[in-house]
Length: 386
Image (cartoon, rainbow, N blue to C red; front, side):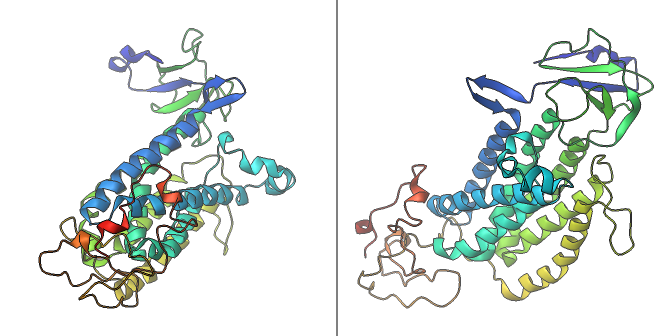
């Protein structure tokens, strides 16, 4: 990909960017690899890299993270797609009467609120199966989302499936020699067009070509970066003070960003509600989420506990076999979501003490094998001292 026209920056204060990039990165016979899908892979990979290191510092084991991640990722992708579909004005004609379109995610269309809702539900219900408190698992999911969503928006920029309001009154007269071949991004001086507008030229783009638009995905990336700058120093502090509060802060910041950025979005219609006619559907969702964050914060404050483990005092893992003899000196598992540590015999290490966790066992095929798909090693039971 080449970039042209940058020399004009020193002479003009107004300009626009031309994007001529095919949303399809490459074709392998009948298989098309899309930029949008690639950005999701990048987002998931970087998000997973971040939370794995976060989890280790909090004394959580890699195999616990992998087990939860697989199911949460599936739930998030399904929720994001379905929440997008149900918001569409052509829901009946395009999706209900043609259900195959629901699965065509390569055509764009993921609503991140849906991913948050379904992913959080998956974490809430599955965390105890992996020996974690529900709230610490949800905090990890929030950190994953805060990091990964930034990269997902890059795919929207290339696709042109998210654009802001029009920044020109009609077709922009792009010089014929500018970005005539893809892939290309160019900077074109023009005193009559918003200086940071974008114009799409590729026929595969999801928006009208030749029109200057406000770059709504870039606005959103900026707001995401501000939120991440606030959340980053809190990623260790809040779980150790009150697990679950990190998620509440993330949810409030994301909802606020959506409330702001959708004022610049051009394609979504106004959704009248309670006599108010200035907000779009996603903004109403953001408002309700912001309001819900107040009782949610109070609920977390009353019910959640500080996270008691660290890299020096890790979560006892894996659980002992159901038929294993009780470890001398151990005490029964208390009710709740956090595993109870056994009394460590003199001279023994934490890793050598078997403890009782929820009834799920790592050897059961329903969940245990799936978490090892990516090669996570399961320590043999005979090394646990059980």
